[in-house]
Structure formats: structure tokens, C-alpha cells
Length: 280
Image 1: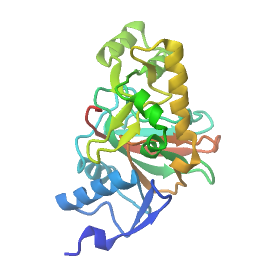
Image 2: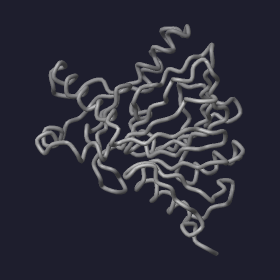
Image 3: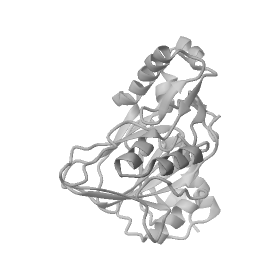
């Protein structure tokens, strides 16, 4: 049988990040060798995109499971029948609120390997997702800055979700129980990819709070300078959604930003997330 790499066509969206994979049906049965090829391509290109994938929720989950165990997010709006699936629905009454650069669930001890996001309903225009290559961002830091960052540890927490619970009317007891269940996590400011060995900037504006052993004013100034690296277009690619498009990003090496320019139009997405390892 023809190898998967010989059956598909790859269309790169930028020099270092983002590739559309054409000529493939994600509902197919893949071998271990196929998943290894996907995994290697993901590490190399950091975000993979697929068009015209009219797959079921079960097939969405099954494809993700080929890369590892599946996460159940403890704070989000999960599908009642399939708790592994996060449903992200925005419209006039529910304005989008994730238009900020971030890396997913870095408040976990073992943040995600990556997420596979599917478009169910898309606005006529707008609602793109942008991705930033944080390995390229690290590579272009000065040697002096790289030396400064080496060995630094950052503290990440889930306060944004706890505040959401509070706004939703959750009791103080329930909020404190979640805080105790998911305490702040310590991760290196510069992460080494477990597969490629490449280094990347691993702090983000949503979940990173401070840097250990550093005065808060100094820590915040350094963090702000690092957050802004994701804003540089040279490190980015941008994806325009169509119904049944999918994006699979390597959460260990990229940040993403969901543009909120489509409000008050409707946008509905479904996400399945693969559990990752402890950052080193």
C-alpha cells in the first residue's frame, strides 16, 4: 500500500509554521506508522490544517486518540455525551473572549501535547485563528537574553477560569475546591521540545503569573517583553475557517489567537485535546 506521505499534498502557509494537508480523509483507519508520520510533520510544521472533513464526533475523538490520551477539561463547556469534546459557541448573546495570545492549559502540571479543533459553524467573514511559532521567536532572541532566560521558572495558574466560576454564581467552597484540585504549576520560561529538542518561549499572557526568584516588577517587565514576541508577523500563520475544516496544533511550540472580529455573527467549534508531558 502506498505510504501516507506519498498520498497527500502539503501546502505550507509560511516558512516555519502552518501546513495544509490535502488528499486525506481523517475518517480513515490509520496505522501506527501513519500516526508517526502525522506526529513528525506536526513537530516540523507546528500546525496542520485539513479541509472538507465531514467526520463524526467519534471519528474526531478516535483520530486524536492516535496521538495519546485525551484530556477532559475541568472548566469548559463540554459535550454532555462526549466530555472529551469542548464546544466553543459564540454569537450575539455570547461574545468571543479568547482573542488573546496563549498556549492551552499551561496551568496543568502536564499541559496538552496539542488540540484538534473542528469548525461546525463559521461566520461569513472573520473568525480566523492565528498561530505563532515560539521556537522561531526564541531563535531570534539575542544571546544575552537567552542566557538570562536559561534556568528561569515561571508560575502558571487557572485564575481566569476561577473568576469565570465566580461570575457564574459558583460558591466560594466550589471555587476553592477547584483551586486546590489544580494548584499553580511551575514550568521553565524556555521549554525544550520533547521530540525535536528545540527550545521555545513558554510563557503566555493568559496563564503565566510571575517568575520565581525575581521581584514582581522585574518579572512582569520581562514577561511582557516575551508575550509580545507572539505578535510579530514573521513568526505567524493565519487560517481562514470553512465548515468541516480542522486545525491540529503543537501546544508545546506554538501560541494561538482566535480573532473576535466576527461578532455578532455565530461561530461554533469543537475541540479535542491530547494530554502532553511535563515541560522540561
